[in-house]
Length: 79
Image (cartoon, rainbow, N blue to C red; front, side, top):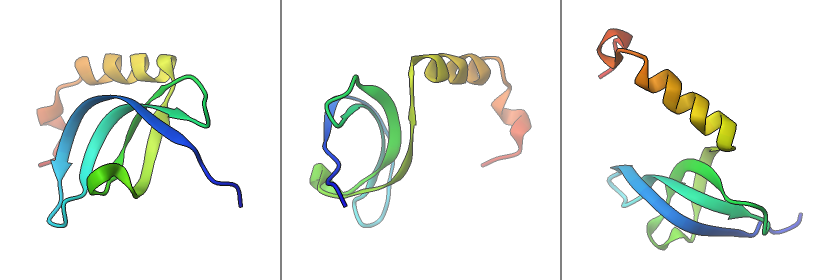
């Protein structure tokens, strides 16, 4: 299996941190030397390991921002 190459080109923020130090982050990540995309996933300290996540292109990111800004999060029923 081929190794996946990645580069975090910009950290946009940390959403949360677990008890073992893993952080759920939003980053711009270049996968296999491609154009960076918005990436949301858990990272181990030092970014040596990663969990499953979601990667969004420009249009998907724009649409997500639009949907979130037009929604009343208090009505979702989440804590």
